[in-house]
Amino acid sequence: MPSRSLLAIILAIGIAWQAYAISVAMRFGPPLNNFMIGLGMQPNPITRAFIATYLWWFLIPLVCLLFSIDIVRRKSPPAFYAATVVVATLSGGFVLQAWTNEAWLTPLIHLMQAVR
Image (cartoon, rainbow, N blue to C red; front, top):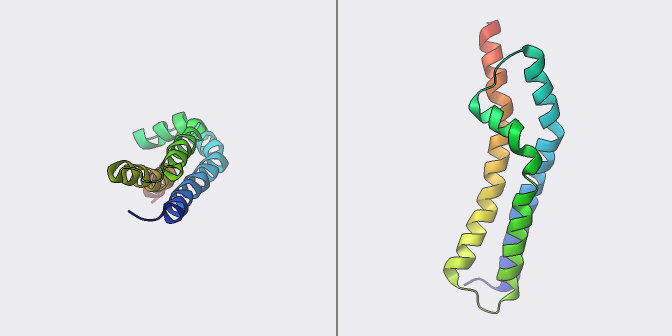
């Protein structure tokens, strides 16, 4: 089991990644929604889900933070529990960033194909 300080660093990186992905989503979510409305285009399911949920994404790092604090404060957390929290925290950042990218790129690629 890694030391508590190493575990805290890994978890902080995951939460920072989530915060970055959420800041990008908050910055580009409204223009994406306006873009879709302006085109009169029905977005794909990924983009629709993104537009419907990105305002609630801030809950993900909050939940991860609570579990991270619980892990780091323990002298010897169960290995499975610690591994689960680390994987959930890091994969949360990946999923949010990938979802934001996909929500934007898919409509743009379809638009470029239609123009061609």
